[in-house]
Amino acid sequence: SSAEYWESEKNESVHGGNSNNNTSSMHGNNGKSKTSWTKTAGDFINEVCFFTQSPQMETVRTATVCKTLTLSRTAYRLLCDDYPESSGTVLQNLLAKVQKMAQEENAMVAKAIS
Image 1: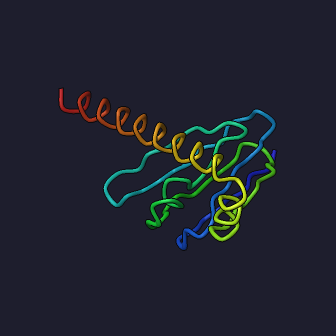
Image 2: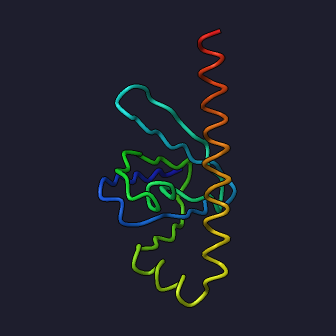
């Protein structure tokens, strides 16, 4: 099986992948600790940084060859202009994801200090 690596620091695009229902691992290093996530087909990569325009320091490694869709910020804005109701749904989904990530992080911290 092949693997692909993506590295980006410019944070100008968001990626969505399809690895035929196989999982991919993402590793982020915020300077303090290294964490990893498992993504499945259809999941987005770099979406939080894309919308917050914050630096993206993740490296992505896939278990198999993947097809990806890369969407620039400009293209996303054009889609939002054409389909404003869909852009609201995207932001609601992003908020739910960020809330879930915060809950998981809080649970890990609570477990580590107990």
